[in-house]
Image (tube, rainbow, N blue to C red):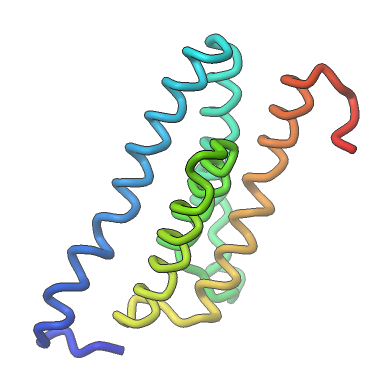
Amino acid sequence: MVDPASTTYAILDPIADSVNPALTIAALIAIVREWRANGWKAALLFAAAAGLGIAGIYTVKWSHLGVPYSSHTAYATSFVASLLTRRAWVRTLIAVWLGYLALIVFVGYHTWIDVATSAAIAIVVTLPGHLYKYRWRSGSRSIA
């Protein structure tokens, strides 16, 4: 954990605070690209899948159940999971996501346990929407 009065904290805190807004902008760009490439229904499904993840994260507050939880991690994980459907962005997104998770632990916002449980929950909540979108897009009843 970094001392909040230190220069290191003064540099890293604004970086950590800018990651989720940047991911939100990237998601909006992805929705527009999805709309242009595949029509408004595909864009709506993409937005709904990401939105379900975010809504689930804030609706089910795991911290009330005594489970360590980080909404910062869950928000970032949900958006990164949604954006991974954009193949050109995969390496960058994974690097940003892992760097962000390490940063919020290093700065002292959350522990590794908070981060790990929150990421797992966010993936579980977000994934069904994207699997549905994939099935809808492929016209298949099976994802296998």
